[in-house]
Length: 569
Image 1 (cartoon, helix red, strand yellow):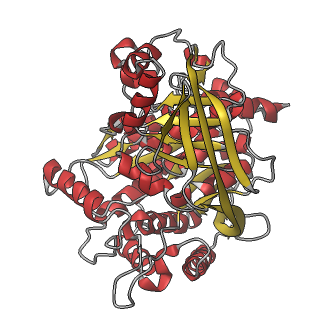
Image 2 (tube, rainbow, N blue to C red; image 1 turned 180 degrees about the vertical axis):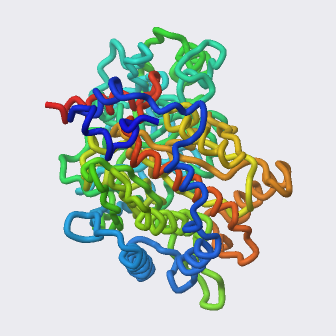
């Protein structure tokens, strides 16, 4: 491999230039043969230890940490544990002049169920909160009200220039209520080559729907819920939005889209029928190129309620292994330290959401990677920055704040890895990529995994949009290529069926429940195996001169190009 492939050795034959130009001019690492020598060292590193991973999980998931809820005593214990470990390992404080990046948040609690309903042709169609709709508002001051707002069906609520798609074309929804479908056209017509077929793009995610409605000036936005298209049932919607909501303290003006929410499929079908429309037919038409918005003539929406507002702060914990030759260029590692805290209950009951798998395990693995990175000899050419995020369980708020207020410029951030849930099931024949095909990082993973005798497999249900549900997504939205993996599908010792059963058992019995507790019987050699794979990737990314890029059809590619172009100016 030529000296130009390592950053610290490229000065003699490569001029100092912007990374986007380096992508085109530097020799490309050959990923078809074998990983580089520094990646190979990561694969064999004894610094990633199953025993140490277990020690970290047991500590972070203990009752003493109280479920690591932001704003609680458990938060203080978790943050102190992370700072102490980073310091012990020899990392430098990575949040300016300290370890902590404070994340200001607002908690919004509706004061009672909203007074809401539809009026169609002079007739009132009452809707019941929890059964027919789940509504909330991001407004932080005073009462919220939408009155006699005209209802417009806006397809999937998508404006995607790279796909030649505009569901708002020819309609002005300012002051109106946009009713939109969840997911994207590719889900409904996977045979037509629309978007990415059955794999959900960000345009299909519910968060995008509200962001676009805000840009369009809609007073309200309601998403029609369908189990298959959303990837979860109505009960998940009701449980998620029937509790106080946290959002970032933005300091900006109050939002235009004052009411946001979901409407059940049954309630939506009744509304459309009373307005003389067939929702099923409109949904089919909305998956065809050139589909137009459809006003529901004579239908209006009203809603009024008030939020109780509380403000708080919670920290991201950031440590840095400083690069030896290009310290201003950064590789990121993220893992969220938070979980759900505790629940009310009798003292003799188990009321702690310990979050051992989610995500004490991922945080533990990140700590092992930090220790190993700090001990690299020679040290990495680029800096490796470890961000233990807060409030992931509240809507990715810690990572979202970092993305909006990065400690290191986004245009100098090469790529990153997110560790959300480590493997507790033992060594695997494979490793799963969530969001497979999104970027060049998959190719790096494939080669390094092959060196372990493993294969890379795509997630089984890309239509459910899991890529948009963890902290890496906040960085992806602003253009940073991010890799997110999951536990493999086939155990070396017990096969695929056993792994599938274990995953189902966790989802049904322990995920986001008080039973997600540390188990001394776990086989954490699988987590250590993944850790060595991750260390190899970090070593590669922090030394190889080539910057990684998004796939040509990625919805995040434009943000990356804009970021690099702005930095070049």
